Image 1: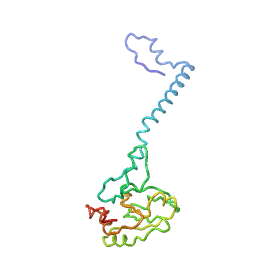
Image 2: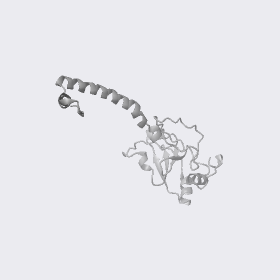
Image 3: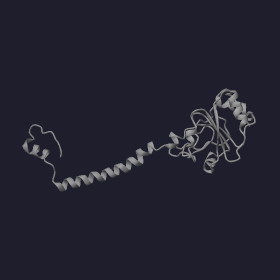
Image 4: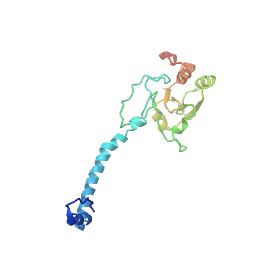
Length: 198
């Protein structure tokens, strides 16, 4: 049904045309036409507007490059791609999600303090890091994960994750100076010489 405003001089005929619905065949054609336009509009919205909101690289791929409380490991940053998320344990990156055998996510491990992941069956002893953290009253939980898919995803045998879920440090062996590592990630040592932690 269409509506129109009948003004002076338009007469009775215009009024009747405005209030009567079109014949059934015309209504059917109109509905089909609008549906086809809607399909095209929906495709356009999904393609163009939807793309603006499907940006996992921007939403969960945020990383702290050159953070004073992350220990760089010399790896090149991966490209900034708003539409693509690259899971990585590169320092400054958000620690990746993986399902653990108990049904929880690796992300459930983070948020209450620092978490030091020992990855793999023969992961190194981390007692010097634990001792350094305890001496500085830094909350640190050490968790050993041996699931092959998680070990592969996390790329290194030792990964230190901050309470905000971002990786502070990673390596395959403990640092030579565990106290310097803990001072760096807690913000007490804002200037760092590259070999102080190696």
